[in-house]
Structure formats: structure tokens, C-alpha cells
Amino acid sequence: MSSEVKVLKKVTGNIQKHPKETEDSNALTSRPVILDKAMYNEKIRAEIALNSISDAVICTDINGMVNYLNTAAEKITGWPRQDAYGLPSHQVFHIVNGTTRKTPPSPVASVLKTNQPVGLAADTLLIKRDGTEAAIEDSSSPIHNWNGELTGVVIVFHDVSAARSMAMKMAHLAQHDFLTNLPNRVLLNDRIAQAIESAKRNHTKIALLFLDLDNFKHINDSLGHPTGDKLLKLVTTSLVASVRGNDTVSRQGGDEFIILLSDIKNEADAALTANKVLELLTLPHIISNAQLYITTSIGISIYPDDGLDAEILIQNADTAMYHAKDLGRNNYQFFKAEMNLRAVERQVTEVNLYAALDKHQFILHYQPKFNVLSKEMIGVEALVRWHHDEWGVVMPDKFIAIAEDTGLIIPIGKWVLRAACQQIKHWASLGLKDITVAVNISALEFTQKNFIADVQQILLETKVNAHQLELEITESVLMRDAKSSAAILSQLKEMGLVLVVDDFGTGYSSLSYLRKFPIDVLKIDRSFVNEIGTTAEDGIIVSAIINMANSLKLKVIAEGVENQQHLDFLVSHDCTEAQGYFFSHPLTALEFENTYIN
Ligand code: C2E
Ligand code: MG
Ligand code: MG
Image (tube, rainbow, N blue to C red; front, side, top):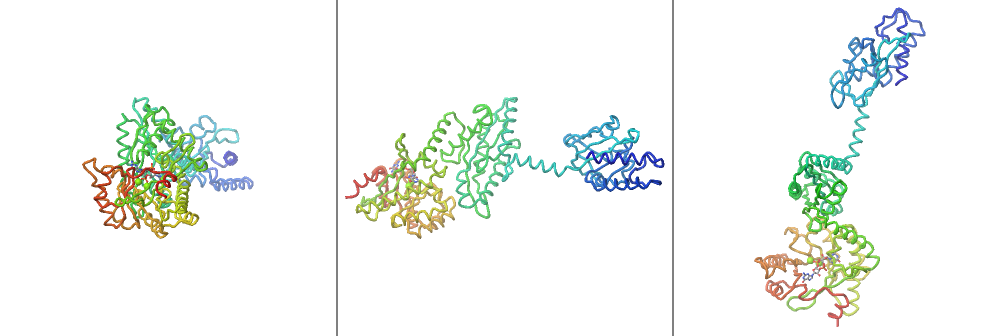
């Protein structure tokens, strides 16, 4: 830029030196009457140079009146030369501060006053002749004549709108999530810090709501990432609709969101928002004509009660969220100090679980199932146990959920299937032919691409007849994506496996889907069996399920049968099969053999 100024100075100086030139005429565009050839050539060269550069150049005389614009200056300002010449510079070079919208001190006046070059403030906008604006960068310098006297000012500037908007875009991207355009963790941390400052001043509180969508992974895996992405965007809309304008909804990545509620009075304000979120999310999300249902688990931490900085508050809200998950999902929990202990426990379990398969720490127990009339043993359900070298026996409700969250359920589930099939083979060799063994299949296994191939492979490898293997899949897993469940079930059915809906009655089945599922057995959830003889309900649900199974021509089995009263009820309501402590607890393979073989 400085070289152009120099060229201009030199040219202006030369031209003004000519005796026939008037002082304030346009030095570069008016035709000099007498000009020696060298000087004329130099002038033309300068003019071409000035008009071909992308920087805009405006010159003024000693009074600050415009006496030159190059082509770029005409273009940027919208002022053609003939209109601009003779006007005060601030009219043609009309600038304001981008933030304050105020007119900054005139650079021309400043140069004329100080005889020194000046630059503009970074955030300067040029108001064009038509009123539109452009971000510019500029510098203004004095023009001197051959005697070194100040004769005017040259302003050199260029449009930085594109560069500035790119810079703003980059800044936005650095602070926002790409998919949802929500603030990301960087910006959230900033906002939390601000909110804490304001809460300190106003003696108010802030709340962080840590959300993790329930079972989002299954939706993503079974319906594909594009659908998952669309769902995340719809969830974003619901979340934003649940909060006030000055609250922040941010995405942490994956299916995790954090809502920052600033300036709240008490916990009840946070609970209100949490309820609103849970409620809004239960509405179906429509994606390509399909209705998707999603719930979320929310953990809440409060400043200053649960932490004094962003890091601790987020960590504690996260811990409370895990607690909400453990309590059956689709709920919110406030952070409590003792939760940290559970969180540590969970972490320790997770770390140990990773090594459990390699250390051969899993073992299957078998709970026999019975015909209620003949009391004959008709099969078993395989139930996994984890024999930890220090902790002893760990029951599935302590580790299956963690195995699901970590994906470890896939190798564990495969191990269970293989071990169950090997057991079938072993029992056959002891003379117990044709026994069926039921294996529980978790949500993640069921929706995993290789599941069917894995089952097939294990059957082949162990040479077990498919009809001896029952798969128990819970009702809620089947209903999560009924269409694809129907497809998976059909393939399994074709292979000859026996299909059982586990924990039936807890998963809101639609009858129309149940009809479409090629299933064989409904297993009544033990919570309903437990109600028999205790509540006013007194087995209403159990008898309704038995009726439903009969009308759908499905077998029905009751689990959790603990006493004679339960059994009598089942017999009198035509339920043919039962399982429970009343008949037998889960047994080791050896115990089972000692009791039921020979
Ligand atoms: P489930 O499939 O509903 O299994 C029945 C559970 O009820 C078993 O608990 C069993 O021991 C228990 N039970 C049996 N009879 C009675 C009774 O009369 N009264 C009561 N109160 N309970 C009874 P367990 O073994 O602790 O398993 C709990 C759950 O863990 C299972 O529920 C199943 O969902 C899951 N699970 C167990 N093994 C596996 C496995 O290998 N893979 C997967 N994915 N899940 C498993
Ligand atoms: Mg089961
Ligand atoms: Mg069950």
C-alpha cells in the first residue's frame, strides 16, 4: 500500500510542478496543456496503475475536498468521479464505527492537522452512496509538493467485508456445533463463567441440566446416521423451545446436551424446565413420515450448591444424569454428594468388566421352567453371573446396563450364546435330549448388524438344533423400532429359533404389531405375577395377558412365581407354563444335572 502512496505522491508532485497547472485541478485526469513527453508518459503510467489496483484511492486537496478517485474507489463508494470531485471528503468517504455506529474522527482532517499518516480503527464501515455498507481497512497519508509542503491527503483503503465475514464465520464455527448450530462446549464454558459472575452479583443461582438421550445409539445403529442426525436437530428445536431466551442450550457432542439456566431463584425453577423438556420430548418426532419416540435422562447441578466452577458443575450434572439413567431413564435427578460414590463404583465396575471375558469370569446359571399342570421341567433360562476374583458373584442387574453402555454386551452376549449351546450339547451327551435353553438378548445385540450371522455361526459351530435355542427379547426393545424388529424376528424365525417376548406388559406393545411379529411365547413380567393376591388389581393384568396370548395363539409363561397362590391363579386362568423360586432358583449346571438328569 505504501508503494502506491509513493507513486501517487510523486506523480501529483510532478504534475503540480508544471506552471500551467492550477493548484486544485484534478492532477491526474485533466489533460495538461503542455507536458513534456516523459512527464506525460509517466502520468499515463500512473493512471493505469492506479486504476488497475484493487485498493481504492481517494485524494483531497488542502481543504479536504475530493480531487481524485481511482476506479476501485468509484466502485466501492458508488461515487463516480464527476460527481465526487469538489465534494468534502467525508461525503464521499463516509465512514462509521461498526459497533457504535458513530462517525470516527475524520482521517483527512487529522492528516491535514498533523501532517502525519493515520490508520483507521479496526471496526470501520464505509457507507456507500446507496446506503449499503462495506467493512474497510484504510490508511491516510499527507501529499507534499516538491517543496515538501502539504497539499492534500491520499486515502488508500480496501473492502475487507469478505475477509471479515469469513473471520466471523470461523469464529462462529469454533464456538458452535456443526450439526445443530447450538453453542458448543467452548462457548458454553464462557457462558457459564458469565452466568456465575452475574449470579454472584445478584445473589441468584444457576442450574446446569445435563441431558443424554435414552437409547439414541440404537436409533442411530438401526435407522442410520442421517436419521439420527435429523432426530438430533428435532430434539434441538424442542430443547430451545423449553427454555427462556437468555438461557443456553448447548450440544456436548453425540446425544449429550447441556442447558444452562442463568439467574434462577431455586431448584424448583430448574425442575420446571426439566419437566418441560421431558414432556416436549415425549411427543413423536416425525422423520420421513415415520414417528420416532425418544426420551432423555437429565442430571441437574446448581451453582453455588453443587460446585463453584463450570468444570465441577458439569461433572456433577453428568453424575446426576447417570443416576437418572439407573432409575429407569426418562426422568431428572438433582445432584447429591453421595452420587459421586456411585459414579466411582460404576467406573470401577466398568474397568473390571473390560477384563472379565479374558479372565473367564462369566458363568451361566440355569433356571428351570415348568408345565404348571404336569409339573414337568420343560426347559431352562440361562442367566449370566460374573464371578469377580475379589467381589465374588456379581448379579446381572449390577453390570448388564454398563455392558450395554460400553458395547461390551456384544462380546459378552456372544459368549453367553456359545456357552448355552455348548451346554445343550453337553446335556445331550448326558442323555437329556431336546431340552430348550432360553438366552436373554439385549437391545444392542438385537439391533446389531452381525447378530443374525453370529447366531447362525454359533449354531453351526456347536451343531445345535435351532429349535432348542430360545431367544428372550424384552417387549420394550421390540417396540422401539417395531418395523425393523419384525424384519429381524422373521429371519430368526426362518432359522428355526423359538422367540420369546420377555418382561411382557411393561413395554406398551401395540396389538397390531404383536400380530405381525413371528413370536412364539409371551413371558409375563414378574412384577405382575407379584401383584397376585396382594393388591386390589389382584392379577387383572396377568389374566389380561393370558387372554391376549390365547387369542393371538401364543404360548404364555409366567416368571417370578413365588408361591402356591401365584400358581393356583395361573392354573385357574389357563396359563400353562411357569418359572420362579416356587419351583426352583437358578442353578449351576452341575446342580441342574444332579437334580434333573438321571
Ligand atoms: P429376566 O430375563 O427377566 O430374568 C429373570 C430374573 O428373575 C432373573 O434375575 C431371575 O433370577 C429372577 N427370578 C427368577 N425367579 C424369580 C422369582 O420367583 N422371584 C423373583 N423376584 N425373581 C426371580 P437375574 O438372573 O438377576 O437377571 C436379571 C436380568 O438380567 C434378567 O431378567 C435379564 O434381563 C438380565 N440378564 C440375565 N442374564 C443375561 C444375559 O446373559 N444376557 C443379557 N443380555 N441379559 C441377561
Ligand atoms: Mg429373561
Ligand atoms: Mg423377565
